[in-house]
Length: 440
Image (cartoon, rainbow, N blue to C red; front, top):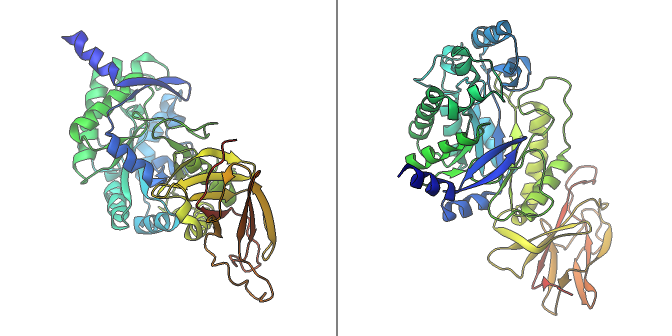
C-alpha cells in the first residue's frame, strides 16, 4: 500500500532544476486556477525581513557563519527592528498603478524569522519593537486594491536547525526536511497558520532546497485545493528568461538590482526601460513577471525602486491592453517587434516595438514579414487617437498599413507627448486588427 501511494504521488511530479539543486514540482494546481493565474501577468515580489536593517543578502549570511555571528543575528537584530514608517497601503497603491495584479510576500524566509504572528516560535516580528503582524497588514492593504494575495514560504529554517545544534548549511543532509521530521512538522504548522489565519490566500511560493520540501505543496492543497502553487507547482525561472516559450503556466522572478532585499549601497539597478522590456518579453512567451521590491528598515520602498515602478505605471497606463487578456502569437519575435494576440479576438495582434526610439512627431515605416493583412486590416498606436500632434498642427499622425506579398508594411508616428522634453525611450505598441500569421 505504501509503495502504491508513492507511485501515485510521483505520477503528479516532474523534476526541475533551481539554483543548482533538483526540485520535485508537484502537479496538483487546478487547470482553471492556472489559467486564472496566467491572466494576472504581472506581480510584485516583496523580500523583507529583519536583516534589511544591515542591507545584507536576505537570510544567506547565516550559512557557514560562526556561532557568535548567528547568535548576534538571532538575539540582536530583533531588538532594533522597528519599521515605524511602514504603510502597506502605499505599497499596494504603487503596485496597482504599475499594473501588478498579484503580490507575493516573504512571510518566512530561510532565516526562519517570521514576519507574522505565529504560535510556533518567538523568533518573529511580534517580538521586536514594531510588535505588529506585518503580514496581516500587507494582505489587507493589497486586498483593498483588488490585488491577488500570495505568500512566500521557506521550508529551510536556519534558526530552527541552529537550535537543534546543526550547522547552518544548504547542502548538509541533516538540514533537509526529508531527514528532519521535527522541521517538517514545524513547517506544516506554520503553513497551516498562514493559509487559515488570513482569509483566502491565492498563491503560494515554496522556496526550499530539499526536493522533498515540495511535499509541503501537497499539504497546502489539502488545506485549500484552489491555491495556486508557483515554485513547487510550475516552472519559476529566477533572474533569467527562457529562450523559448515554456509549455503551461510559468513565472519569471527578477530583482530590480542585484539583491532581493534592501541594499543601501553598492547596488546596480536595471533601467525602467529594461524592466518594461522584460515584462514585454515575458508576456510574449506566455509567462508572468514577478518583479521584486525590497523595502528599507523603516518600511518604505526605496526611491530608486519606486521611481522605476512609476515609469512602468506610466507605460502601463498607455499600453495595458497589450499585457492583459492576451495570449502568445504564432511567433514570439521578429526583429525589434514582440508579438501577442488578443484572447477574445485572435485576429487582433499587438506588435510591441522595442530598441527603436522614435522622436516626437517622427514617422517611420516597418515591414513586418510575419503578418498577412487584407483590405480590412488597420493599425493604431495604443494611447493615441492618431489625429493631432501636440503643437504641430501641420503634421498628420494617422497610422496606416499596406498589405503586400512580403508582409505588412506599417507606417506610424510617435505623436503622444509623454514627457515634458518630448523624449520617450520606452516601447511603442501597435494594435493591428484583422491580420493573421503569414506562414510562408
